[in-house]
Every structure is written in C-alpha cells, then in structure tokens.
Amino acid sequence: AASFTTVEDGKLTMATNAQFPPYELVSDGEGYEGTGFEGIDVELAYALAQKLGLELQIDDMDFDGALVAVQNGKCDVVLAGLTYNEERDLVMDFTDTYANGVQVVIVPEDSDITTLDDLAGKKIGTQRGTTGYIYTSDEFGDDAVSAYDDGATAVQALMNGQVDCVVIDNAPAQEYVKANEGLKILDTEYANEDYCIAVDEGNTALLDALNTALDELQADGTVQAILDKYIQE
Ligand code: GLN
Image (cartoon, rainbow, N blue to C red; front, side, top):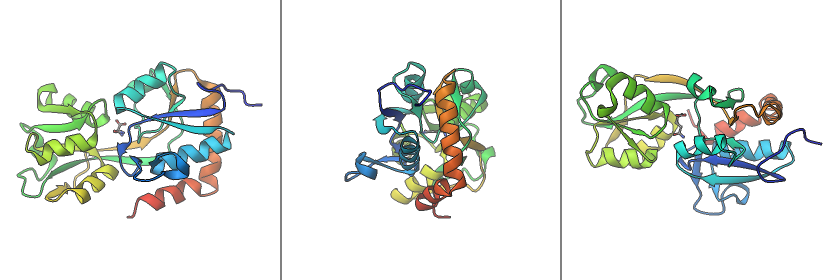
C-alpha cells in the first residue's frame, strides 16, 4: 500500500495555470486522456499519477494561486513550469528537476530594446508571482514592473503598448511570438532555471514517491519523449 495520502482519495490533484503553453494549456477538445488540458506538465503528471496508481485531477488557477493552494492543502502538487528557488523552498518542497527553463525578453520587432542593458527605464510586463517578476522587480524596482494574471495577458499588454517588453519563460515566449504578429525574443538570456514539481513543505512521503516515479520515467525515456513532442528545437 502507498505510504502517502492525497487530498482526495485515489486522486493526484494538480494545481496549475493553463495559460502557459506548451507546458499547460486548455484544450480545444477533450485534451490529453480526457483531462481537458494539454501540455508537457499535463502528460508528465498523468504518467506520474499512473505510476502512483492515482487518477489525475487538474485544477486550473492563477500561477500565484497554485503556489498558495499546495501550501494550504488544497492540492497535492504544483506542475506549472515551476522554477526551483531558495525562497520557495522555505515554504514548499521540490522534486528533482525534469526540464530546463530560461527567462527571456519579448519586445516588439521595432523596439529600441536590443540588449538587457536597455531594460533600465522601460516598462516591464511579467506574470504575477513568477521568477520573471521577482528578478525584474529586484533589479529595476516595483514601479518599473507590471504584474499580470498570466502570460497571455502580459503579452496582450505588450501588443497594446502598455508595457515595452515582457520577461517570461522561453517556451511560452516562443508560442506567444508565433501567435502574435510583430513580436520577437531578444537573443540574450535573462536567467537559467530548473523546473520542478512542488509539494507541501514536509510532505516527504509524496515527495519520495514522486521522485522515484520521476526517476523511472526519466530512465525509460518517457520524460524526454514528452519534451520532444512539445518542444521542437
Ligand atoms: N517559471 C516561472 C516561475 O516559476 C513561471 C512559471 C509560470 O508562469 N507558470 O516563476
């Protein structure tokens, strides 16, 4: 028998923000295995749930809400292209990493921002509660940085000229630039990060079970196959 318990018996409840392609997005159709959602984290969570003998339940919410939900025992895990960092590690526990993330800068094609040095004095758009927000507000001050509910809304603000750039993870940035005419991504990387799964602080039984399952899914090539399916280099 499993040594861990979950919020709902027989289920692995995952909190995420499904405005973060290709890691998580709302499906036009039934979604992956009928979940209503698609993406790297969705397929990985499904595979992990199967290994643990659980049914996957996905709760879609704002990104910062997902971080609170896991600390309040409203969900078992956060899979949300979630970056490991030391501050977060004080209030939740992280699995081993399963993917690499890079914070990049999206600008209009005709922008005078060409390197990171040009960001000073500009209006920066980010997603609330993300590392993109944390880094830019640390460096340029709160007043320079606007925080939006999700990446799609931040990019909309850029399209409308309310901000001069958006700092966000590379994988969704690629998707947003594809979907919106007239945007590009700067060559220079703002920060390099590890994506991990979060559980509530001290939930060691579930953390250990997830790390064991993740290990197996990495060893048999499942994790790489999921990444390759969604990210074309
Ligand atoms: N990787 C970023 C972070 O953890 C953004 C994640 C997200 O917006 N889903 O803060």
